Image (cartoon, helix red, strand yellow):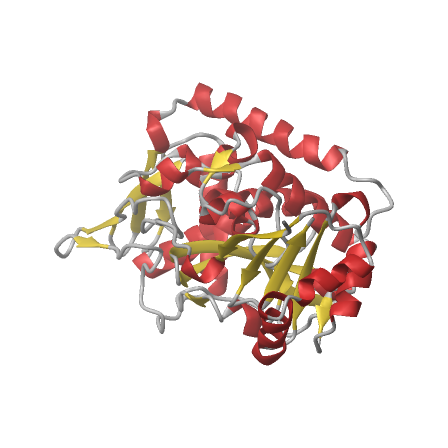
Length: 378
């Protein structure tokens, strides 16, 4: 008897993500501001330090960020800056550091003591690591990134490099469900957890992606917000003059507890409209690009983006998938997607794919009702 095996309807899958410094899976270390002329204040949780409409001076923020990178990069835990540093300036500088130096993975919070003439910042170190610990761990992180980069052929363009790094991070990393459920910060929320330990939550995936992209000289950034699964972190990246969103974590099937074992490309170089189906952006983030192009979207590049449903066209594409025996399809809008779901699974047109490949007795598939994606394996 022929059977169709259904992997998972992604709309029904949930994942637990705790509030974090900037994303899911890390608990917010409260950043305390002690003003010598007023009462103690505390920053807000979940990466929302400062009000969304609070303006800070870009040059001042960039200067503070540079000092943070120099200090933490030397494994020091104290920094003195002349003049007053506001909590909004500090929060913006920390967010900027996530883009510029995701290899500085050990900051677990900070305390600011400030007045009109001087600001002192004391950093808390994740897991109590010593300077010697961090120096050794940083070397391991560099080596892990270099291992991925060294395997990229010289002739690859930026799209191919990004695709290779995306796939390698997913292949080498297990989604850390225990870390996501923890009530404390951990190495699982860092680039080190992802690239060296091979276990991470979304923040770790995103920071690892930014770190490798930075080493490749490809413009990118780290961002976060609220998703239908909870707090989340992901990236943007620039390809051939256009900006795109990319979510390495959600392309790892382990992140939604799917039975499906193979990585996906559902969130590989998508536009604003696609991204906002599943999440919103934290308003405090500054300088995020508009992502309007689909020119280098994975499905567009691979002839798997369908503006109309045709089982014959899907069959021909499946036949070209080669020995992988799987194919991902994206549909341009909800109506076309629903037409494909109805034709393939309600009217059994999926078996018409057997005109193009030898299906055997079982077909496996998954569908994503938000991103209008169907994946078929045989």
